[in-house]
Figure 1: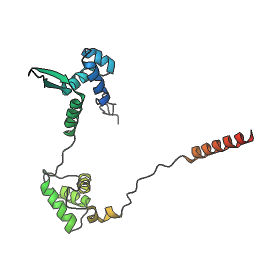
Figure 2: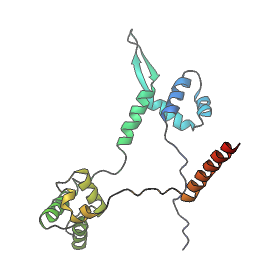
Figure 3: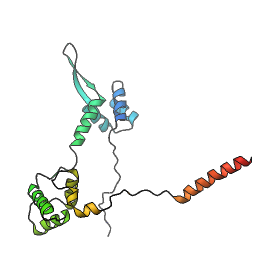
Figure 4: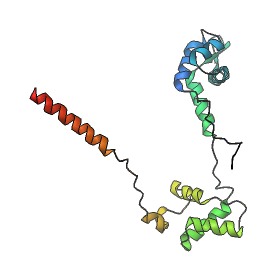
Length: 187
C-alpha cells in the first residue's frame, strides 16, 4: 500500500544556538537585518525573532529609555519558552485512575500493564494513562509505588548493552603495529 501523505521529511530548521546569539549581538549594532542574515546563514525571520526575544528596555541616568540586545536575555527567554513545550503530566486529569492503580499494585500485586488493560477493557475511567506512562510515573517517584513493589521489574536485567569492537579491525591494527615495530628493529 502506497502512502502519499507521509511526514518523514527532514526538518529544515535548527534552533538558535548561543554562538548565533553572540554573533547577532556583535553585528546587530553595525549592520542591517539582511546583512546579519547573510553573515550568519539563517533566515531573516529567525534573526528578527531572536533580536525581539533578546531586546530589553534600558534606562539611562537621565531616565530616558532605549532598547538594547543582550544574548543572555535571549537565551533565558528561549529556555523559559522551551520549558513550556512537551506533553504535560496527566496526574491531575487521571487522579481517579492513579488511585485505583496504586491500590491494585500495592494491595493486590497487579502489574501496571494489568491495571491499565483492566481499566481500558472495562471502561472504568474517563482518562486512563498508558502502561509506559504509569511506569514512567513510578520511576520518577510521582506515585507511592516503588520499583520494589513490581516483582518482574526487580528481576529484569537492566544492564546497558555494550558496543562490541570489531575484532577484525582491532586485530589488523595490532598486526600493523607489531609489523612496524618488528621492521623498525631490523633496520
